Each structure stands twice: as structure tokens, then as C-alpha cells.
Image (cartoon, rainbow, N blue to C red; front, side, top):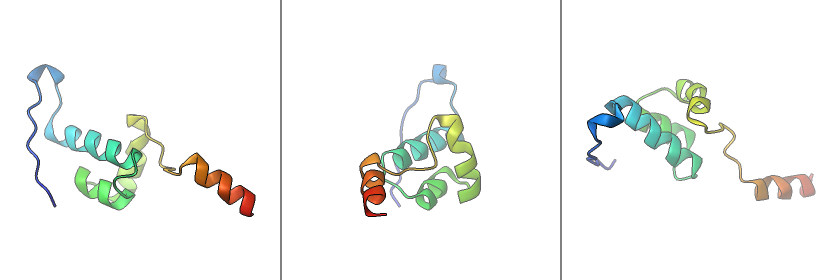
Length: 75
């Protein structure tokens, strides 16, 4: 696993746990990490991470619309 150091201004009022969650949620939303990988980055269980995603504006259903359309056509 990579270790990245990021400087965040004090005015952002974000602690390390929240920064990890924001990063993990963003990478999950972009499809860069699986749910399990993102949960690990955030330091949470998959269930807890999944439950918190909505609070960060990220859907647990990380499924591209184009894939959904293909699935409906193939059903």
C-alpha cells in the first residue's frame, strides 16, 4: 500500500480519519477502488464504510449507467 503525505490547511478543520474517508469515498466513486479496498483506506469495515458513503454524496451502487443499459438489453 502506498503512503502519501498531504498538507491540509488548519482552516479546513479536517482530521486524519475524515481525510482518509473523503479520499476513500472519492476513489470508490471514480471506480479506482473496490468497496473493500476503500473501506481499508478509510480504516473501517465494509459495512460501516458503505453506511457512511451517502453522507459524502457517494452512492453504494457504483455501477456505470452504460453497464446497466447493457444488462437490461441482455435480460
